[in-house]
Picture 1 (cartoon, rainbow, N blue to C red):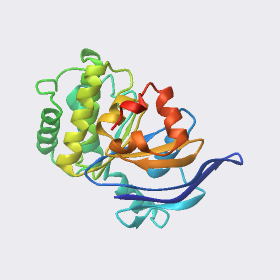
Picture 2: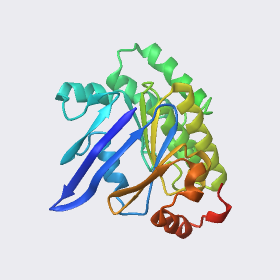
Picture 3: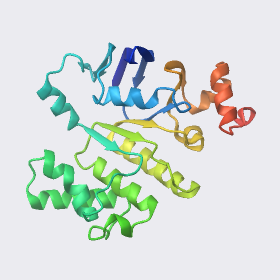
Picture 4: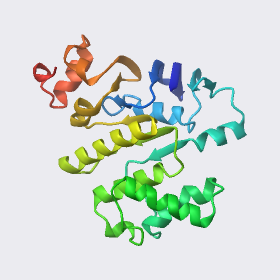
Length: 248
């Protein structure tokens, strides 16, 4: 579990995170939603250690990020898997080489063990027999699956996804959502997703955090969206094309 305590972050004197407090839970999909400029990306960057907050703390299973040494932060980074918005696969590498990349960088596995783990992860995401291909030879959805395989290669405790359905058609988005739920439950990961995909939110949002202008206004599950009691969330959902009166 990741516990965020009174998190603040400013840039050039302008505060962009105003005391965020939430718990991102194990074994479920945690989604952070809100319009562009709401602070979602800044929050994610603080949580993964790419930005240092100006106030508050982040606890990884009780371990304070503020109190960690440089080496402890390095060790923590090896417990994380990252899925970037554009997949971020290396075009000059085969799919096998892409998935194997973090294993070569951070694991002590032999070459044979790395290859075995790579093929296992590709099988897990439904991409058998693609190891020899290059990213350009895969569809957008298949590239996302390959990126997910790379993200879980080190068997992470924490999985962070930035707009995993961006650029995908609705049916492929549904498949990616189903895959992320399955992997989260199988590996009992703390999965954190920044998303604008409201179909995804209404379908797999086990724990949802809604932000606007750097402030956290609501959190709950997809089953509570329709009666949140939060006017700002209702306005956001309506603007996103969600029929609130049809929600549970």
